[in-house]
Length: 216
Image 1 (cartoon, rainbow, N blue to C red):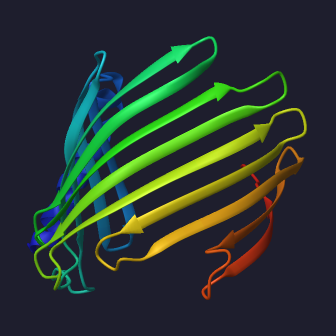
Image 2 (cartoon, rainbow, N blue to C red; image 1 turned 135 degrees about the vertical axis):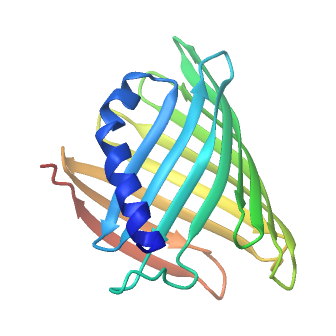
């Protein structure tokens, strides 16, 4: 019996226990069959507290028709997350940190983030977010890199209109990027949005999209 066939049997057995596992809100268990011969599972735990903490692993495997594992198809990612949400009558704020380590490829990342939403006036809401990410890749020429980003969004809830702007910079390439976007809700499931990336630069690019969301 090949390694992949054994893994399939294990996934089948554990999947039958998934309902019972989900009954405990502290346990994270989410198996998935991605195709006929590839599987993935997210497993871990969460600790409810003022700073909610969770940690776990993403494991994946794929095989050929003969049952042999496909080269470079394995996934073994360790991850952890800690965040805190504060809610007041005037708004909401969230602070958090995430870390991930790819144990097979020798890469990892640490991200610190903060977001806030609040009532700006009787007719306008505001959202802001900022993050900084430190990434490491053992096989990359420049092994360590830092990326910082910030975004603002102004929302008019009565008309479904929003105006957003964002900017980011990375020391890996030294590039500075920015974007401006407008979004308009036409119907409950129909949105029109227009955006411009890197305005007033040689790499300026824009797009207009009409999006319809269908749930079934």
